[in-house]
Amino acid sequence: MQIKIGTLIDGRYRVTAKIGHGGMADIYEATDIIKKTPVAIKMIRDDVMLDSTNLKRFENEALIAASLSHPNIVKVYNHGTIAGVPYIANEYVKGQTLKEVIDFRGALPLEEAVDYMIQLTDALYFAHQHNIVHRDVKPENIFVMPDGTIKLGDFGIAQAEGLDNHFTKTNEIIGSVYYMAPEIAKGKKATPKSDMYAVGVAFYEMLTAHPPFENNSAVNIAVMHIKDKFPSVRNYVPECPKEIEKIIYKATAKEPNDRFADMKEFHDELVKIKSNIQNLQPKKGFLARLFGFK
Image 1 (tube, rainbow, N blue to C red):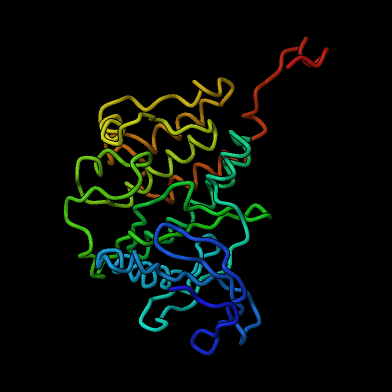
Image 2 (tube, rainbow, N blue to C red; image 1 turned 30 degrees about the vertical axis):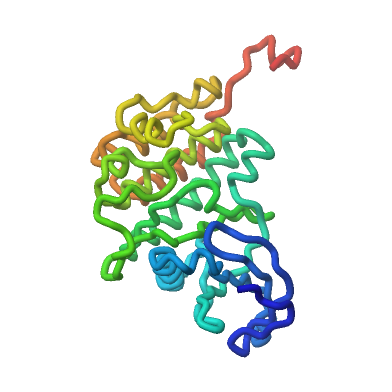
């Protein structure tokens, strides 16, 4: 269903432009005529709506994300239908995805990556405290604002305790294989520790501009998550502090019980790193400082 520019949705949202499309929806910019603020309208595509599972996932995103209010989570203001077609009114996010940032700039500076991680772990700790597991944490679903704020979005396949999630089978492997925790690759149920693994993978990618496991076969990548030793970030960034490497290794341990106790512990370790980050920078020798060698 295409929405005409100027359409007023639910007597409140005036559509001003079509600004893009995602895997399931077309995205429109609109103005909330009551609050006089911009919003993003996600309208499920006709072809996607034909699949009842996709329809359930779209509705799932509206219900779950609307229940979360956190500065680092894309806010859902409202949801409903237009001529029987579901829509979601989101916070209007002006920024690139973290994936776009990495693709354009390459590996990010340590301090910037740590700052993004602190925000991301805080957002996910909040979600986990509300019994919500995201299940699809990856740079494509993380938005970077011009002021350095990050926002986690796309709760379409999230699972919430007490909410009907029958659109996924018990052993269905779901989410992006590049960020898939070993237990998920084995067909086990997602938990907050699965999100933690994905965050650790995203941290690795921020610092190296590469996912840890790469292959032309999704099945092979899933097997690598299960069996292969997680690679060292220092393979790409030899000067990376060992303290950072240890944090990534702990977050991405093969066994969930070997990871951080929860996202709060992960977050607190990152805060410690940030408070001491100057001491983690590579030290130059006397001659390098004297002559300006790198």
